Image (cartoon, rainbow, N blue to C red; front, side, top):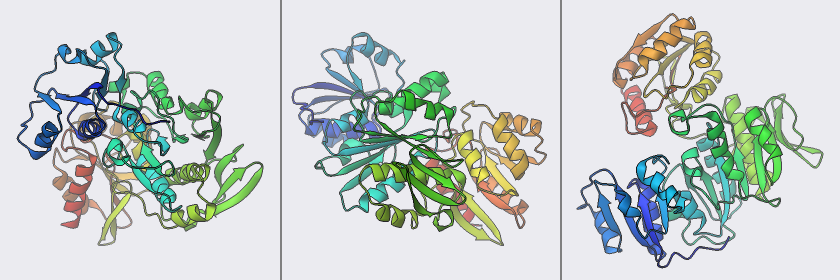
Amino acid sequence: MSITDFTGKHILVLGAGISGRTAVKALARHGADVTLNDRKLIDTDDDVWQSMCQAGVRLIFGTQENELLDDIDIVVASPVIPRDIPIMAEAFRRQIPVWSEVEVASRLTDAVILGVTGTNGKTTTTTLLGEMMKATGHKTVVGGNIGIGLSEQVADLGPDAFVVAELSSFQLENTLTLQPKAACILNITPDHMDRHHTMKTYVSVKERIFRNQTSEDWAVLNYDDPLVSAMAQRVQSHVLFFSTTGEVPEGAYCLDGTLILRGHGVDTVICKENELLLFGKHNIQNCLAATLMAHAAGASLDEIRTVLKSFTGVEHRLEPVRTLRGIPYYNDSKGTNTDASIKALEAFSGHLVLIAGGHDKMTPLDDFMELAARKVDTLILIGEAADRFETAARRAGLQDVRRAGFDMEAAVKMAAEIAVEPQVVLLSPACSSYDMFDNFEQRGRVFKQYVNAL
């Protein structure tokens, strides 16, 4: 796709977080007339705001009136901003195009875009795919829903470079022309219902990742997830499936501990499951998906194998912290919903001391707690979700349920006092972090700090 000329375009960027600031810098650099607005009152004396002012950006903080839309050509909304707030509703009423920062990035580069979405596993798969593409020797950047904004990273990339993007539903919601050469949906389970309201809407937003693909592009789909595999009937691109439960028509699958690539009726061994440093069925799925994406984008199997056998995972996802007096401690702070935490529990044989809870997304708890009743010896609850979680846990038959209030240090100390071999202490909250922390990263690092201080 040709790079868009923003010269003279009047653009309103909503939200002064990382995404908004990144979009502002990129758009101003490409000649746009930019206004940055945030409902929060922000002290503009900081250097970051002064540099924007020097670049000609208008800063309007502490108010958000519909008059901001007058003479605006494009609105760029940060991912956290829902489509139904007054100024967004007014923008749609006026038929002003509303973009995400990812849409901006896609219009500022002719590099090859590889997009990964799904409810869980996005960060691991995206990071792994990024390493595979770097192994090809091509310039590769990794971003989107992780790291810094994409529109800052794509500057000066040539057409032979790769942009590996983790894409959340919030980012996909306002994409219009994004066309990944290869795109993947890892799985879809209930999440962000406070934003999308229905599963039908959530699924359709995720499926936007394929919206502009053609028969020359690739769609990588989870064969084991009915919601995802059904998309094969609707996409225009060439479909590749991955599965951990059986063979696939074309794609990659795991059978009897061996990862296999299937293309044009020919099966090729990728590697053995026991050669991977990642563990858990969900990580096998992530490895298969990344392999298909990388292979479709031109990476050789040898390059893919080398990365698969050396990749140790990402911070906050089943991350080993330390072993103390024979008890392993794992940080799975990225378990921000019940499905992610189910995958974490499934990775262990049992005898867990589980720390869970946080800001409650109000997703169903039955499946999570039924599994916890089989795998967890002691459940330690933190945060505002504790009441609902305890009720569900006891209903599922989990007997030893304890509380640590809003105190991660107390939860870690309680777990250390309880745990005996062969138990494992696991933080996997099944909740977002916003009742106690700025984000799941901060939550994970605080957990690790207290574990390392034991």
